[in-house]
Length: 256
Image (cartoon, rainbow, N blue to C red; front, side, top):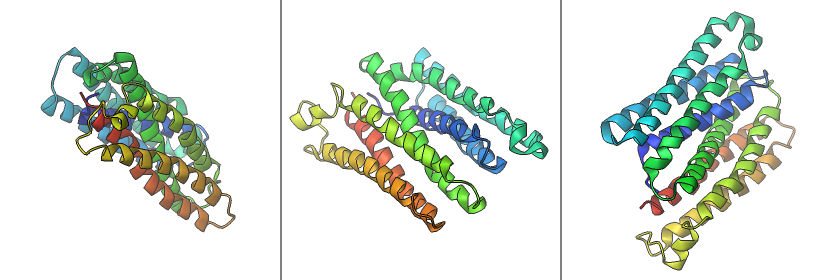
């Protein structure tokens, strides 16, 4: 399963915007949070188009991937423009369904990206979709934790929900990477990671640490004091590192 920059940026931006919708649909978090998320992931998607066209040109499958990236960037920009235009109406003036357009476009782009990745197509597609959700929700949870500095009166339900979604997506992500040919073959020696199996252990530690951090974050958020949210955000920083390790280390090792 080939690891390429444009596909990773497509996964990251589409997954991040999917869980932006999960948060914005609650109509609790201030408009600025949506502006921040659409800007970040829209730029990542735009960067992905450049990476795909300049450094990784290929056939129709890459064109589908890059068209998906362009659609993600454009729809994120459109949702941002609508939100800014209706800012006087506050969070009630923005239709959260607009935030669903980008992840849908991203999923369509991943259909082409799965062909670019190589290997068994159904397995590649499942891995890319699961990875998109996984990378997106971990990133969004950390960024939302920071938003409590801007909106300290915000209820904790929003970040608790994203943390819960990490726990839901994690077993799907891990199972997809365990499916043969997958990470178990690294330990049996069928797949050579080039480091005598060391990268396989790095993957195991990353995966287990990620779900462990999810548990600790939930425990931290049960504390009454505001500092608990900041502690949880710090833990989610670590979860981003281990989450990306879980997905990208495996993708690198399993590359054909």
